[in-house]
Length: 442
Image (cartoon, rainbow, N blue to C red; front, side, top):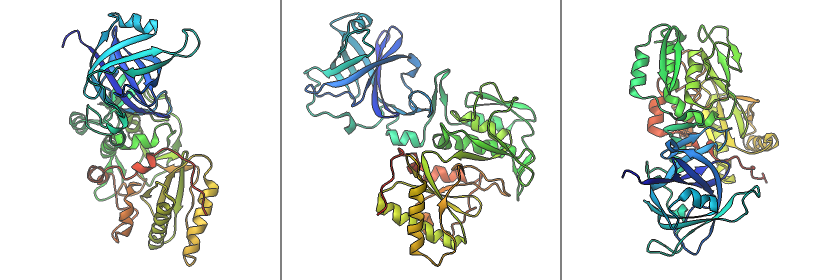
């Protein structure tokens, strides 16, 4: 209704999980970070920290904030509704005075909440306590973690991270993370030198029908752009915060290539770095003839397998067993060329751990001539094409697919991966888990 104040609570997994409690006051969202989340339990006092105001267009934001920036992580609209001040009719003055009473009318949170400042103004801190009054909406033992789904989409934080719709740009607000039908139809109609508006950005596209990957039929720049636009929402969480190292082949695969580690002078003004924070940057890379997208192997232990294909499959199945035994989350992908890579989210230096694990696995099958080894400082990003005929993709596979006799390292291409992703989801989602110290090998 007109004149009603809005509120939102966003479950936000950044450096640490917390809940952002935001009340509309005088045209902005006055905000508190609540580490353990609000509760309807009147016996519980929650620590809260008054943080910067947010613009009103953040009230329905659900998606991802790019890694590397403030608050990088995934966000869901955990609760939303309207609210009214209680006791003091001027909520801005109540906040300034350090005690705000608010009646909430949300889908999860209802009743009277109180926020009380716990330190003196000007002390350098802005700590508060948050509590629920004992009223008709109070519920003893109520835990926000028992109610994990978004009231906007019905999805969990994990589901939004795996398939986000929007990205928050602090300079321009929410940006779409999925290319719509109109954008893809506009791509089909592009001529040489035309501008394509995609993901909120303008990209000039030269020679859209130039062949970039030989084959039968060959793959054109237009097809690579379509692939990049469709795959960007899934790829972005895997590369966000990491500087892309691009291998450009302006005349196509099979010709001389070069590395691109920073935007060239003719790049659009909005592209200030190859540390990717938005999907349009990946589409720009495709338009610029970047046929391979490499990233630093940071925050992850990467084991590369080589040798005969059947030997690699046997080794990968042994690593699968080892990871299950160790309780380690990991992802497996085919290279698009001849090999298999295993990725494990990990904190710190992983070289020694990987070396010990590969020696242990090798001891089980000493007759194999080749074994796993730590990957180099740069690795091909998941879902990146490989500069080879047919446009093969370094595609994640399910651990169960290692038992499929039809599996091949170059089985997936830019033409088949989007449909496969729609059917099976992001099979590399485990790699997006937090980087934890690796368990000891006994």
